[in-house]
Length: 134
Image 1 (tube, rainbow, N blue to C red):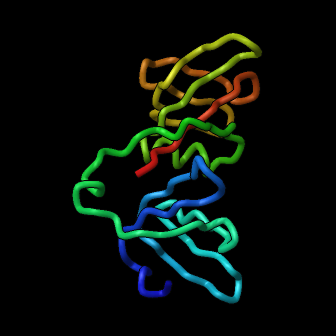
Image 2: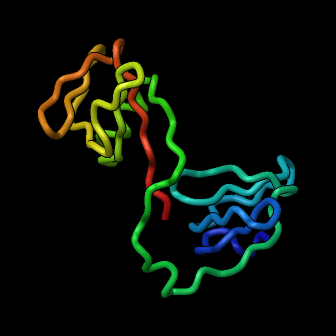
């Protein structure tokens, strides 16, 4: 499978219905028994890969879409990345939704500024980011 390294591929993983990952195969590591795919460099164990096929030019042209699963941001670099990539961020204060699919324009050690001008404290709010896939 080393011949796939550096090429755009579709990787089918797990059991049906398969988890499908699209992107450039960055690394094929037999010693670690894993493959690394995509610009986010997702490591996939060999045992999870069902099959790999070349990504057709028309499939490569599809626009990126948001992942359906988000994660809570806690580290400074996560906030930096959300600003840099203009990631969709949902903000919660307790069980109250404060902002849905907003964009962070800047942040400091204790506060976040959203595109609509809201200035929210990191200590009292939960920031959930959804990265782009594709």
